[in-house]
Image 1 (cartoon, rainbow over the protein chains, first blue to last red):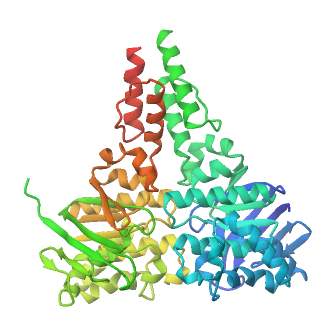
Image 2: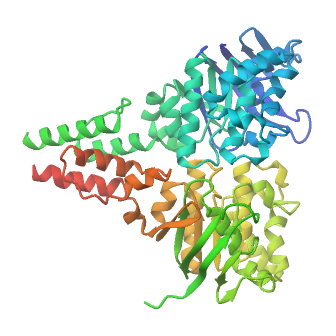
Image 3: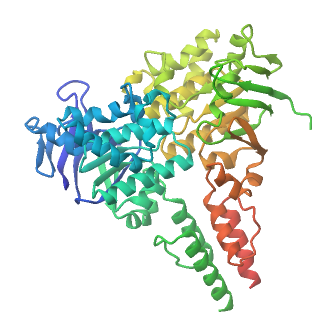
Length: 289
Length: 280
């Protein structure tokens, strides 16, 4: 599903002394089937932006279209339940929201609420479990007896069981160890591709944004600060530095390397081996000139 | 050099319930005054249990823990908590004050710090974490990262001898993380504080004086960051990351570029490449 923001502003507690502009004139477009990373500091408006994607918040000004749904200050659309079924949101620390007696019941809770038949739910769970990396034996266990990583996978399965077309991920790897983080991001990326999802990832990780996103949107103090493909955005290290954001380590290293050796080796998604080859070649050639 | 031991773990074992597996199994180590030690390991390796044992939130099943000469037990636990400041990952669980300045004052009030000194420390520690403009803000109006900054200020304000950061920067953005570690490092050095960081962040590990690597409830390795990152294959096996510099060094060496193995940061690797370039 395509997502479009047109001049969206959101003001908390408008017309009170506490009014606070969390989003200001934000416009952008997310193509159907693309993977977008939203980056910004705490307080930049990321969380507020996410809450607009399934109608938890409505814009104070401007308009949002998500597929056929339209959100504006005029009030909730009648079919907001449909929107919430189609836009799955994995909030931060989703495992805190587990509550059922068994894993199977917890995963089924969402789709059941939306009137999906038990047969269809069972069918979906069967397909989902391997995709989120959980064994089938887990279904009859209490979600509270699982490890942290497993709990999070159960919570994610619960969102995916609604068969959303848009997947919104709010820092989904927070608190996991490095291997857990990589496995979790690889899982999302695979789901993104296999199920042709439109994915919006809120992250602090420039590395993840570089590795997975087609487009990056940078928010600063409620405004859109930058937008573009990762390689274009990360070319502008100075502009990012101005709002205290960094660049991925590989690009930072290559910048330092180029400065030292007077070369122009650009990052183009090379593997570590390919980078090593290019560096070796340059150093060998360079020294014979 | 005769350094003073500030923390001693002696054959410490711990399990949460009798029939469950040991979370810590015969763990022994020392931490010295003024030292920065990073404790790393995959989720469930026992890292956070160490932190909770250190200030008596948990008590060991076997073995003993000594903090500044005092054995941690039910009688000493309140004394120990004056010496051991702890900041956890989730800031929502550690707020007590109605405003930011009340929260920072809370720990000092309990310890009888004079009012004037309290004011000065509130200013200093909140400035250090860049929250000086939020003195009378209510905690629920702060973002997660801001709350964490205040939590760190509150602990620094009571001038502990040991500061434990239990993945305290995990929820912050990279710049916030860097700034807080910088601040904490400054305070550590100026006040001779021992610092224990429990972390996955490679930059934090590189800055530490020493690293303790936990695996399945036991100490897997106790060494310097430089030595640790030489063991790249083994690190991957226990689920930990290898820094970018180490990965690139490995690939370059595989292709016959004769680099020293132990570059710890960009500058050192570039220097090695420069030497190679000059020799060609």
